[in-house]
Length: 438
Image 1 (cartoon, rainbow, N blue to C red):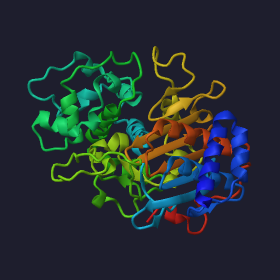
Image 2: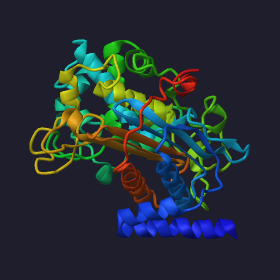
Image 3: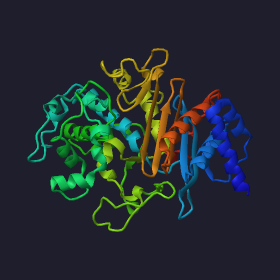
Image 4: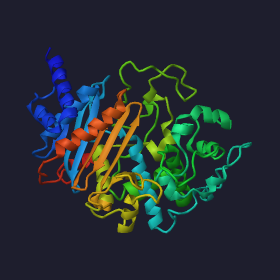
């Protein structure tokens, strides 16, 4: 009975959120503490964020979640909520690892900018000229516009592919392997060879259309220019300098989860599916093999914790030292694409991030954000020009995941509004090494 009443109350708070954010804040503040485990630490004055997260989880039936919050690079909250694994009863910890899905694009964009700073790559270089080994499949014809695609256009999703028109090849690894005559599921390079023989959907540089595939190409560019695997280069040039050692590229199948990684859950009554791995013949839940995460490395494959992700935000923006990027690179990261793309839009896609200038200013004065989702995964990260940043990870993706992402964004931002930043830094406190290292 108590649980039912709690669910009713929390559902009411989100109805109020649609009507008036201040009413939502009041309702959450008056609600009883939920009976769901909370782990980790928070500095004084951050309790309303716990209530906000628990309300979101209850409304959308999320087993587990993680939230980290920083203010100007200082970690002020690092929490785990609910269960990492329902079957074992394991709790989510602030250092638990989650698939971060498309939040991986910011990591890839940062890696590309480090190569630019080293003088080994130009954002205006012709991308496919740097990938001569990835020839189109035999018997296919190459769209002549492919040769003109630049690294910058790949980063800004203006390279010419539109998944709403021709589909997302990153989620067709079995069909592409069959077309290529290679073992299933198709790897990242095979997908590029397949797509190199297909027509673009629009002229590069003329519009923006979100493309996971474009970031797959960027991952192979990182490999070609650095002479290292994508994962090794990112660890050495991006994550290690940021003090992040636990992040890794994820694996698709349940038995191959990393130590400390959560389990992923589809929404209630979701249909089972066939695995993209031919050796698996029984029907499975989509998060456990309905796609090939290994091929998604550069656009959606990283596994890490929310505090680690915010540590990366901090070293990129320069609020923690040493800063990872030069000022010129930070300006490129956040600049508006060249006309005619997003000319009149208040927000636009920069390099691996969505950007909304504040009072006409970009760079660190702007708001940055990105969302991510896969079956069994929902993530969202925001960096506000006011100094606050937050990352929220969930080990499920509700059936209505777009409204869910929108509520995560609006509710956490509303909870932060008016908060006085507490002193202290959980990154530096005793025991905080668990957040960023083994």
